[in-house]
Length: 545
Image 1 (cartoon, rainbow, N blue to C red):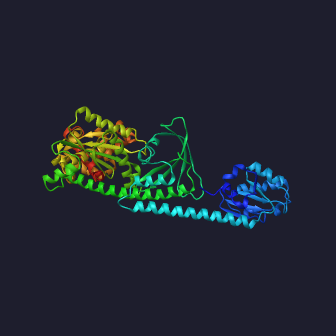
Image 2 (tube, one colour; image 1 turned 135 degrees about the horizontal axis):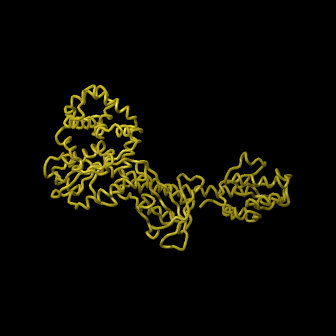
Image 3 (cartoon, rainbow, N blue to C red; image 1 turned 30 degrees about the vertical axis):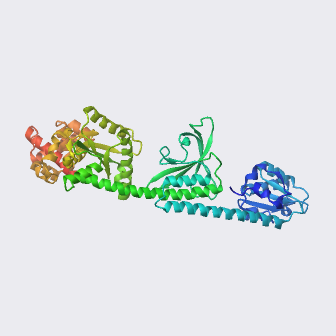
């Protein structure tokens, strides 16, 4: 607890002191004591100071000046004013008393026989002892919690929180977010409703803190106070430490314990995060080895399957869930990777609410899942609907999502289906822009682009006439493509490109003059359309990275 005016007035040297005004200020914290020789207090007084004065320097002030002087002391957060009478003033001036009453400022009267030196020595000794006690307490708390945090055997969030509870004599809770409990020392304070929340402003408070008024489900008729403290770590995010002020209000020494506990919790969270990252990287490596067939034997595949919670005897599908955001191309690469990881983890948290035991990994802007193929048609549709629902209810910054689902296969051939799932997403971006979830079967004829023609050979299948058009009029390729897609309609092509139909007509005429296209020949039109799609794939090769 801080040293207050009440504590100071209980000292032997102030046994004859009388509080004349400012009963409300008895809880004011006292950090120093000073003799007032001149009224220019704004030049030297500081918050927490207790002033001693005979009022010699202000004895001739008017009542208004006296009240203004008291107001100045209040503004400076001076703790109180001890006035010695019978030396220069026989009674406390009325302006001092009225000002003190108006601003609830403590005025203490001491007799002329009281010695300044005795009072100052005793007050300073008391303040010194209090600070020494605080430092000793801080050292003990810090040593205990840091020893706990650095001890590999005993270190844990639970041990740190239980130690904090013992230090402050109040139950504590620790939340991963505002709703998900990690650990609490008393479960009856788990569920509550926040009535109000205000930032706690306190001198020398080295961490962000809020005081909440809450009502617990276990005690619905009573209001309680608790402290909410964000524990922030850039690599982990924000967790929340809650101090339930059930037994007593958190005091000065308690804040020392809380501050040290925050450091210990941050160390433990960083350690846990590092361990989890190592585990996740190991899991991802195994996932990739299975997905891309990088195992040396059937026995090793069996071992990997067991670690991934998969069954060699069952068939599976590969799902590629790709997401993109405009900011990905506007930010530095390290920021993009961080943002992609955040989005991927948020999407998976929502999907895991439907399917808690999915096998997956996040790579850049793709979530890759291996899901059971032993689902009914209804269950498969429900899976797609749940993915769509997550996207539609997304409330973060806008993202564009596409989902590709492979055919069913066993684990020993899963690498083939992984390529197909990725092909679905890649081609859907170009040819099925309005479709959210697409299976490999849904690609139809487009499957031949992956099954029959390697990507590096696409250029060989571009018709000669189309290549001449691409070389001569590269900006008009889209015009030709839409013109053919819309059954050679000038109007629809113009509407799609937001240009005048005469512009479309001019371009088509110039293209016809260049290569003598026969728009009435179905075979030539078919070759052009296939070639245009191959050209679109080649032009967007970054999608296939």
